Length: 200
Image (cartoon, rainbow, N blue to C red; front, side, top):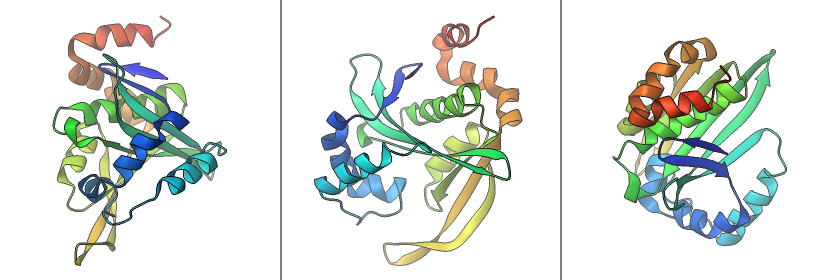
């Protein structure tokens, strides 16, 4: 569990599946988070996915909750991989539409970077986002990611093909701007968080 600013990233539990099933079948939410608005899933498929994913040591799934009241407002994941001795995390997240445009996406992304670099000691993080999701691109770039590649015309959504953008950030790049980002996004809660996540 990670408490950061107004949110908590906690483990994905079976009791969360009904809410996740609703999110996974929300057309607009999937349009922006996955670029697959018509990939509707029956509840049983969500349960099966949960059962398979929790067995994997290379997947870290989280439910995002509000610290004040404990309401679940979205999900996040870090997909771990290792290639040529370099440890990477591919991150992804989405929020309930009620919580769009409130600055929470930046805090969730910051939380995933904290988990990846400050707690898991990964070497790099990456994220993917469909061409039309400008809001996600801004969030990633404000958190220090750079757009480093594109899978051209690799997603088909609503009658046309779209590019899929690839973003990444290296451990040393994040650590250089870590305190600046924490102070920028957490505001008055920044010093308490920095103190809580430091031994000295």
